[in-house]
Amino acid sequence: MTIERQDMNTRMSKIVKHNGTVYLAGQLCKPEDESLDLSGQTQSMLDKVDGLLIKAGSDRNHILSAAIFVSDMSKVNDMNAVYDAWVPQGHCPVRYCVEAQFARKELLVEISIVAAEIE
Image (cartoon, rainbow, N blue to C red):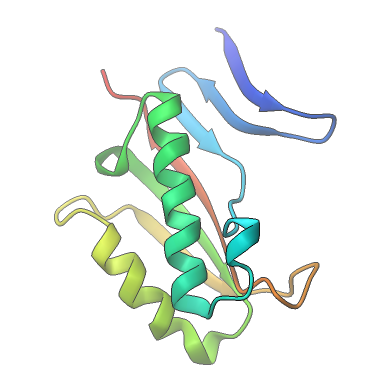
């Protein structure tokens, strides 16, 4: 079985594909959006996920799992409002959301995605 790695550097790959499954590295907002609030950073992050899913041969309808990390759980509803509008109705993945401390205080949210390739 072949493992395909895309957008690699010395530490990680942004995309790994194996046996019809797509694994995305944790995604943050775009660097130019780090000054935005949690809702804005969530939208920026999900826009990046959309691009990576397309590049990997998948899309939102094929997401299997989403792991979300937020810097402050008291504001999770702000993230959920954006996330809920982004996930296609009837295609909700398995998901968990936890509070996490990030490397820089400006960062508020991160997501890691597992998806199926489009056949």
